[in-house]
Amino acid sequence: MAAPSVWLTTLGCAKNQVDSEKIDGVLGDAGFTHAAAPEQADVIMINTCAFIEDARRESIDTILELSEARRAGARLVVLGCMAQRYGQEIAEAIPDVDAVIGIDQYSELIPAVEGMTGWQGVRLHSSAMDILHEVRRGAPAMPFAYLKVAEGCDKTCTFCAIPSFRGRQRSRPIAHVVAEAERLVSDGVREIVLVAQDLAAYGRDTDRPERIVDLVHAVAETPGLWKVRLLYLYPSEIRPGLIREIADNGKVASYFDLSLQHAERRLLRAMARPGGADRYLRLIDDIKAAAPDAALRSSFIVGFPGETEADVGTLEGFLEAAGLDWAGFFPYSAEEGTSAALLPGRLDHEEIAERTRHLQTIQETITAGKRAGTVGQTIEVLIDQIEDGIPVGRSAREAPEIDGMITLDRGIQGQVVQARITAAYGPDLEGIVAG
Image 1 (cartoon, rainbow, N blue to C red):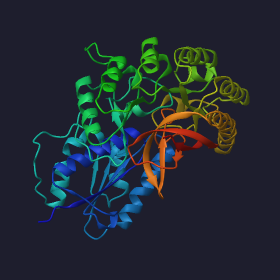
Image 2: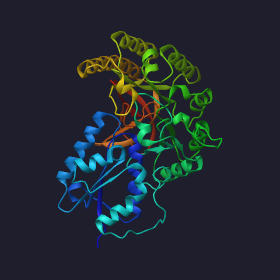
Image 3: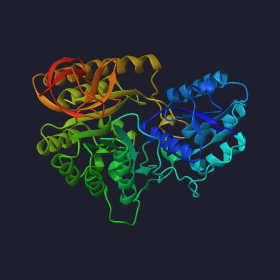
């Protein structure tokens, strides 16, 4: 019997992408092959997202589209957050789905796929897959890789349902994380991006003395690594030691992804998040004092219940004062099972959309000004890929897939070059490789 082929589609965040890469690696070890297209696959898998309503809608649409596209006899498997959160509902609403496997059932994935295809796996590894601690991954297509260091979250933000289906925080031992980083670098990765629901709180859930600073320092020592980057830092968890490690360690990208969510203190209290504009500006001052050239990113919820025009004005003023390099704005989504969904003062979608566009326009102007200020500088650039013959990369100031890019005149994928920036176009830059 020929080995069955699998097509895996991934939706949602970087943490889902990590899970998919690990699933891909374990499938490969079991002898399954990659399908060239979903129409040619024996098994189609969709790793779904359930974070907000738009993500759930995209997941459902993708399931239906791939169900329609599959060839006769092919199997359809739904994985990920929607499978975890709404497994029974999916099975009942979409009878064409052959299996719904939630995050805490991934140890059953290989036996389930073997059972539906009749394939007897290679069995190179006898242990069941643990999606958090698993280090096997498919070969990276890019010279960067996300590395998940913890699962779940202990925070009680009123707008977020993640703890209800991802569970409490569970941190990996540093040795396991470093082993995965070393494996990725040996496969050609030059930049490791550490991710978790609450990255700065890494290690708080264990009886080991390991903390985020220890983790960052250990990963940064991986031979052959260009940079390690941290994504999603809960502001109240950022301690002076972490700021110093990011600022002073040359192998760590001087990049602070601050999960601020708003600037109006009253709304932040309703979100069960400490802080406010003044407190956040002091944190930014502390970061800039330690790392004057640090890049700053944040994300904000627009239209949280009770938000007023004055609150939007507070956020406007904060954006102007903070001078963030990057920011994302997300319309509030009332999530089932969250306390914020029961709050009065809900805004209509059109009003939220208008406020979101307004804030995005303000930040786009700030970002464009920041980018224009880099023209004439010579900076290190990691070339991610070659698009239509043109090298495209990033410096330490740009996180993969969410920030701007830098196009160059020459270079090869995975190479780190010195480039002089010659032009800026909104969030994107052009440069010439030096030498």
